[in-house]
Length: 221
Image (tube, rainbow, N blue to C red):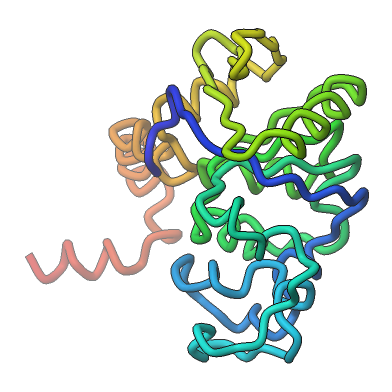
């Protein structure tokens, strides 16, 4: 997982509350078993005028001109601004994969569904919760300014707006460390690889019947 330290990105405003994971990545794309390739299908039901299928080329698909992410001014956006309860619904990790594959590294909202929030930081997506008044102000500023960008300083826990206004945000220290160091669950486990190997060796000596494959290997030697 790529470490997240400081990041500057253009904001795309998705002015909807309770955006669920089926809207983020519809059910027909859950057959994907890799994290890559889901970006073109992000918000598929809102983004296109036809129904998408996994693996198809989206370049020629008819786009919904009323969907905000189809507006040319947000073509290079990589920070998503949303409303309350973002990521509610199912526990599909594909929702986070699709956002990342589409180029988003940050989502800002007043609140997030718990499972989505946990899936986000475990995959390197920074979910920032700000109070509703601050989110309202950002929506107003983004709509009135083409190319509105924020600088995100995770270490300092602050956002820097174009007018030099700084917005602080809270984050759990453990989550912050994992994002700064690029540690997913596997990387965290591998940091304890020596202790894990030691435990397995000790258990194999104490209870060899639990490790028949090791016993057979010893006999072969």
